[in-house]
Length: 369
Image (tube, rainbow, N blue to C red; front, side, top):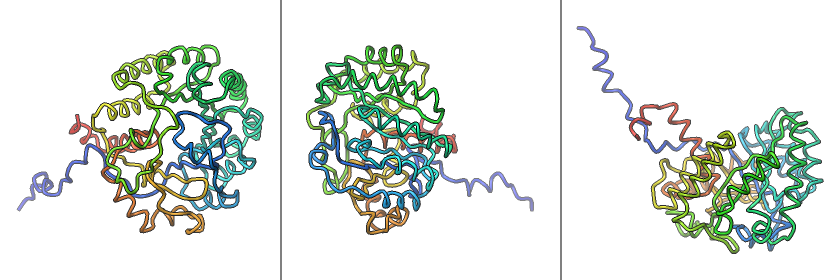
């Protein structure tokens, strides 16, 4: 008897992939690494101001080197704080991830004030030596008066702009180094988007991207109260919600004018604005607790910045894979499976994961459309 293969195969045809994505195996690709709580600014929009006002313990260079050596090879390490350049051993931390982990991209989030230290790290040519990428993400949150007021430091806008000019010049001689400005959009600066973009692009020659101010009380949904990290800005809020669609459109136009360099950032902002306006996310949070991790300066570890730490690296000999596959990590992943947030890092990494899944399963893209 002949076998009618096509009809038989229907019985074994896999069900369509979930259009909102499939949770990946727990293997960290992107690490948010706080290296200090110390800071030389006291910004209105900072979520971490209580820690910054009372800095705690910091992991040693040796402990961070162990973390780099034992972790999976990472796509991105975002070094943050506090102000990372206040650590005198920052170059050693960066080199540990390039040398011992083969991290593809190290990004340092900085307020851009400590030019001598920023220049010293670039001219060490660690990125060139290891053939990986180093980015400085410098914060500039409005025009001069607004920026200096939000960041509570008179004269800082002018100084940072001067430092950006020097960093752009350094880019020309260091091909694995890049500088980009991040503007945190809030109620104080949303009307200054175009003029700030013009100054940065036309006069300084630096690339420019955007985020929306965030806080646990207004940027999260369905996180169990017992594990929600109760951190909000010191003194700041979102722009009026009725302005968010207009702000998004203005950023789209700026991005087009500058050569559409940040299309993925625009897609991220589209998701964030939709969430704030009450629309469901087009995908699950696919990265928090799975492909993205948060390590704080004292060695405590969280699935994301909006949930409390669930373990400490010291209890696992600073071996992140051991911690990440522990029963405590498995429990935390179950606890956050139904939540969502507008945190840019986790929207972006979830967007990347979702787009990769959609590329592998185009039929689910059609089902979602």
